[in-house]
Length: 322
Image (cartoon, rainbow, N blue to C red; front, side, top):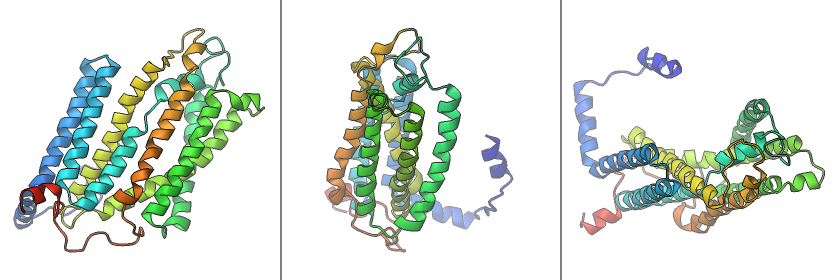
């Protein structure tokens, strides 16, 4: 926390305080964007709903149901009150992040269970799983960012998102190979198999992640950059929380509930199915790519410099005749 609060309190960024006139102008601009303020409030309600559901309900069905309702409310709310281009891009990334169901709760035990718990497993030490793979993933992420900057910045959003999503989906199928222990049958050691797949997956994942960051920044109207970016990024991050809740339900349905206890091999029999579902669902959103993502290069401006209204031409305003 000190890495955040010390630079903030000491003003290492050199931010200048706003004078009363600037504050009044900013508040006037914010007051004109009533729809954006409403979305901030909706985001707060959605986040708190999922938080309280997680604290007070042990049922995975309940938590997943709350998450799905929150996802639908966010999708409809953003799509109604934001200008069409912003609403479409937000819908694409919200759908994709929400459908990328997380199965980490079971895969951790698959990789780290002892021989007594899962005799057929890879039996990774926690040091290897957390430290070696963690450091390797970080280095590969840096490599991915460098190669993206070097080779991919001139691609269009559609081209890059299509290629990277297909590549990530194909690489994710290697998890199915791992969970079915097919790599062992082929004579490929677990450590080498996981390290190799992690390298390529992390590099391509950065190529997949960067255009989302770029287009989100491009869709922030003048004077509303911080608020709009936080709102869109928060909506995408909410999608990952929704995916975690729904992924937990998927694991329960497939009877994948390992706990690190003795002789729990049967808990991993359907893990490959969960992995396959979590790979296929986000890929389905690619069907909407030509509709939701603009056919523009990452260097193109998507909004005019003097465009300050995030809700111009929205469905809600057209309904209201504004």
